[in-house]
Image (tube, rainbow, N blue to C red):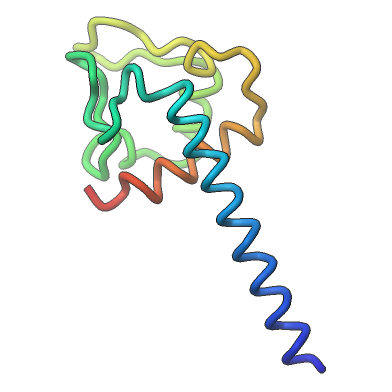
Length: 108
């Protein structure tokens, strides 16, 4: 019985993770892609790349704050507005897009 319960919990947790990544992908495609591009390498000159050597070298806490409050990278022509310019984003939305970004671009 415990094994069955453990399997169900793992399956449900996996589904929650997949749902979160799908939500993060949707948010990225609606809010972030215009500046960061489909490959995370920047669609606008000077935008910090979403790679392990770029923005993803920072902690989740730092990235969360940068997304929530906005940021400016040295040498960038423009600043990232708070919530990527989408004031309707919740903390949960930011967590979802951060998880998606790490999963999608973390190996670049």
